[in-house]
Image (tube, rainbow over all chains, first blue to last red; front, side, top):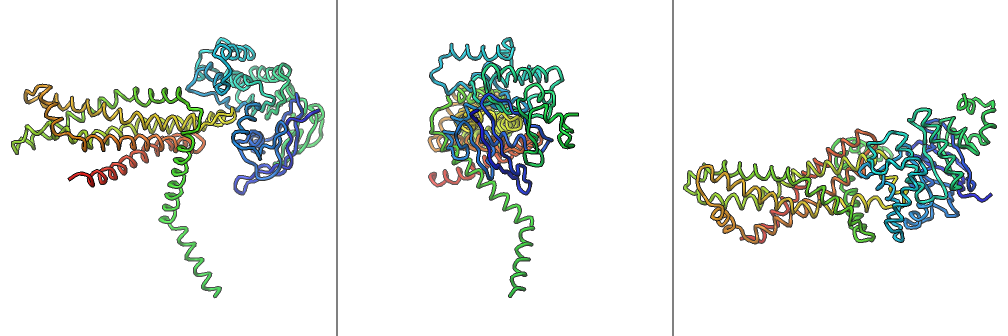
Length: 241
Length: 272
């Protein structure tokens, strides 16, 4: 199957602290890859490298057949429109309403008329089941609603790749399950390839086609959820208890 | 020879641990970063697409929402200055000079500086805190990964808004201050509105108005620039938000005084 992301020997340090020591992985089209790891193992750094928010020290990073480290700002911005990123905090723009938040990524698409933008916004909100929240401000939304709106905002550009940074953190078990099911539903509906960073094992169980365990800045183990669940390795077992 | 090298190395190490050395290191690093930020502003300013809607929104926030505060401050400024100056002028029998003296003081110096300091407090801190919280809550990163230049959308519009609006706020504040002064004059006397303002404008000329208006453009630019710089480069965490707002006010106010000092020196070159 065609790979949409290929990472080879990626390394990143912050001062004397080497966060990513040697990461190599790939993501196939339409696949959900879950990355498990303890806090501070560089999971968020890894996906921020993929969208060019953090520049790695060494290694090769290809997304949609383009070497991210060799792109200029214009090319990188064009590529970023094909990669959705759901932040841990959802990162909704506080000064804008839900509608304005969803319209914001569409502002550079000059060929779209306001009517078409409105239709896209409503469709995106329907996808996450929150069309009634269209005129609300982010401060009026609950944690789960913010995550859903954040997801709708990233999906409005129909990205080919989705990157989820701890999508269920800070949510109650029921809302977490709803968000995980939504991630799976979006994969099926839009055939997007996704990297899901999490340490929520229930989220991994629901969403993962493949799981990679990150440990000490390297890819420690890889397999399906079931394979890793049955592992006798203490470092892997710790996640599945 | 090795002993001499070791001696010099020790001296250099001592200098490096010295607090004055550290102060200058931090100072020059900050100056370099602000200069880079300013260069980046001018580079980004002329590259399309232009964010007109956001600029108008920011002009409204900076301009219209500051009107009550600036107006009240201006009114009190004019009133107090007149009441305080009157006894001294009366001692010299120069009460009739009161409108002209207050007018020149307000238009040339007090109006622009006090309004700019008020704006550095209100607008500078608000921009610093807003941008810092946007950074803490990853909103700036979210803009960047959407393929939108956050510097252009957030920073350029806010600096332009303060540069355009603060001169207008100063004009408004000057007008209100002169009105306050007119009321203060009428507490103990009876001067008509037309006579009072005729007296004020009799002594005000081009060299009073233009330099003070031009310097307010620089005040506005400095307040916006420092607010944005501090917020955009804030440390993560809630402490970073507070620190950004605080240093935006402190550095913004300081810059207003420095610009004023330079402006006064330059103006004095062209006045007899």
